Length: 183
Image (cartoon, rainbow, N blue to C red; front, side):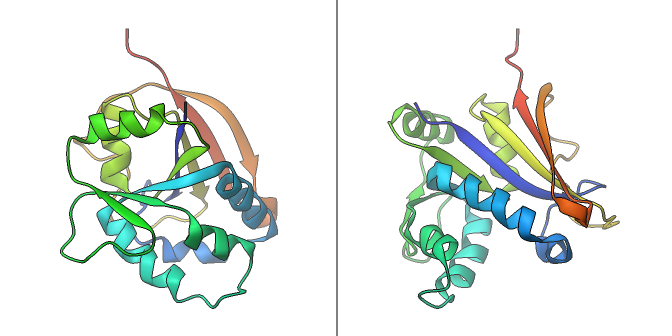
C-alpha cells in the first residue's frame, strides 16, 4: 500500500501560495532532504493549479540538468481536476470522485504518492482521511498576505508531530505530522 505524503512550503504566518519567496532558504541540506523525498516517491499527486505552474518550469530544464530534474520529469503525475489542455509531463487527470480515485491509487503497490503545494488538494486529502503524512517546510519569513494553507474553511484535524529536520543555518525547518484518526 502506498502512502500519500504532502510536502508544502509555508511562511511562519501560513502562506503557501507562489513559493518563489522560498528560494533564499534553499541550501545543500534542503536539496538533500528534497532529493530523498523525491527518491521515495514513484508518482506525484498534484492539484491542477500546481501542475500548471510546475509542468512548464520543469520541462524547460535542460537534459542532463541533474538526477533530481530527470526524476521529476520522468515520474507519473496524477492531477486532480480537469484542464482544457491535453495532459503533458506524464500526467493523468483525475476528474472523478477524489476520495475514490486517491484511495484506489493508495491500494496499488509502489512508493509514495508525493504532493507538492496543492493547498485545496491537501485540505481535501485531510478531510477524507487520505493523507498519511504532512511535511511543512516552515520558512522564517512573514508574508503578510497570500493564500494560507489552512483557511477558515479547512477541516478540523488533529496532527501528531513525528519529527523535525533543521535545514542547516537557513532557519528553515521541515515539521512532519501524521493525521490522527477520528474517533
